[in-house]
Amino acid sequence: MTLKPDCPLIGQNGNIFNLMGIASRTLKDHGMSEQAEEMRNKIMASRSYEEALNILGEYVNITSMEDMENSNEEGEVISL
Image (cartoon, rainbow, N blue to C red; front, side, top):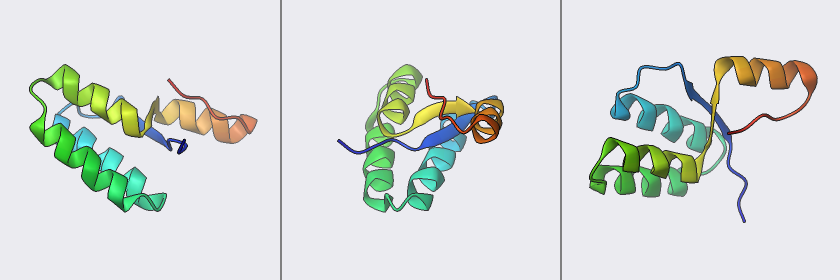
């Protein structure tokens, strides 16, 4: 099983293309370019916003910037 990188999507502009771009960049930054492309293809084929959000969650741990800042301070990873 591949670990999912944390991705600060909570509090971002909720436009699915914006969220997909942030998640894609996160995956690429973690050396997961193939997964980023796969995720984008699945989202583009999805039939609803909710389905697209679920797909995002399959590839990244959806967090907020605050969660990421707290995890860096405390040395722990917080994921949803």
